[in-house]
Image 1 (cartoon, rainbow, N blue to C red):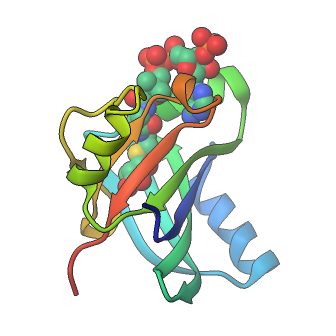
Image 2: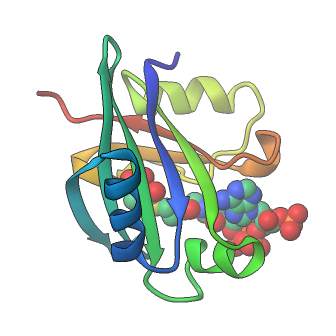
Length: 140
Ligand code: MC0
């Protein structure tokens, strides 16, 4: 079902500071920056590697306010891994297959994600405490 790890989402207080750390420490390069009002985040995608199943990124996430998903996460747990995004061929199909196995979908239908992707989140309580995201990249 999964083509690749599309990205690892990392919650942080200060996006620019964290980008600087990933650039200078690991040599990663920012390929996209976006504000996603609906998701309540300011985010950056940093390229990690290209593979047969597609490209993998690190996604740095700064909350737009304390009441957002990432804002609440930071208050409760501090900075760190917020979610894992898996690349899938068809997000709607993957959602239906996973829901049929009894895992709760947070999103009833795909939403707008980073770099034009269609995304959907699965509830962390049904995935062993891991917030899990399905990512269908836009067709080239
Ligand atoms: C919350 N919980 C998590 C978690 N966030 N567990 C693992 N990983 C996370 N990231 C746990 C809490 O610790 C708590 O457990 C329980 O879930 C309820 O959390 P809450 O703080 O009371 O908050 P809720 O219930 O209002 O919301 C949690 C939920 C929400 C996961 C449903 O954060 C959500 O809808 N997330 C999906 C959207 C999202 O995260 N967007 C931001 C990234 P206890 O045991 O204390 O009860 S957007 C993004 O990444 C886009 C741009 C993209 O990739 O393209």
